[in-house]
Image 1: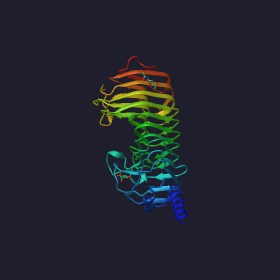
Image 2 (image 1 turned 90 degrees about the vertical axis):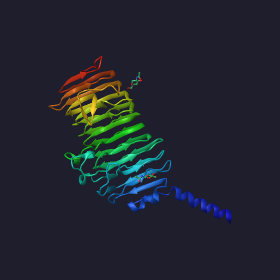
Image 3 (image 1 turned 120 degrees about the vertical axis):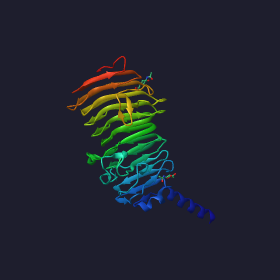
Image 4 (image 1 turned 60 degrees about the horizontal axis):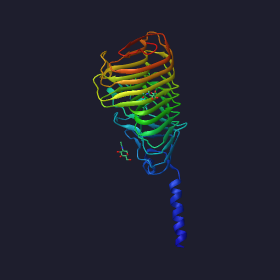
Length: 350
Ligand SMILES: *[C@@H]1O[C@H](CO)[C@@H](O)[C@H](O)[C@H]1NC(C)=O
Ligand SMILES: *[C@@H]1O[C@H](CO)[C@@H](O)[C@H](O)[C@H]1NC(C)=O
């Protein structure tokens, strides 16, 4: 009898561990946080000033999202994230599903630098071969994905902030300060960087399409920050201010940028600069005077082709004080001329 009871208890315990825990309202989030198999079932609306915090998921948890989850507009500022996920070996599958951040209720043309407070959208601290796939992020109020952690792949992501054309500033799609991150097969339409790598190594940005924003960026690199081993390959960049960009802060020290590869990139109708590497950033803008405290070395561009928009500044713009080993081949960007100073020997196209 005892043995049978024990078996029943064990069977019940294991079926609970493997059962789907369904989140279908904000109030049902907390009961699922220790499950290893979670379905977020839309449609539902997260009440204003509330966030979904899945930062402490158990190792190996599978999260599936269905339908649309909308965050009601509130008064949270950019130190908050509407959604956070963390854990090791986690799979987050949002194929066909949407997270709607209600951006139009916040956009005032001031982005993260003023105006009404705006929360960021999606924070990942995932590690250990985690995967985030398929989710569509619609109308983030400000920065979309903030990626920390390590060893995580983002696949088939859609970022659609296209409705923010005139007022949705600072809607960076992927801000990365992390190691061993792959972002691939994704589509971005926004009003700031498509990718911004601020620190870390082993970042791969593959087969993505960027439209409407500021380009694929490394930086602005601040004191003590290092970025190395970044690969941007197979991407198309359309109607953005810049194509490919590296910028460092002019008086920053104790950091570096090295081993950057840009390969098989198509630029279409770029508004300002096709390839831009500048060491003169300060307070979010260029000063014209580069600093040498964050050296940039070993930058390779292979097969970067395309067009500048009419009125664009330079197809290649380099303003360096401490740059070395820039190797460009098959770089051909029509519709503007280059300006390259502070780099020797000059790369092809300069
Ligand atoms: C999210 O949950 C974790 C625990 O899993 C906690 O440490 C953290 O403070 C929470 N963050 C927020 C913003 O509530
Ligand atoms: C330069 O960067 C490439 C990647 O673009 C890397 O394969 C190579 O090892 C680097 N060279 C050195 C000397 O570190």
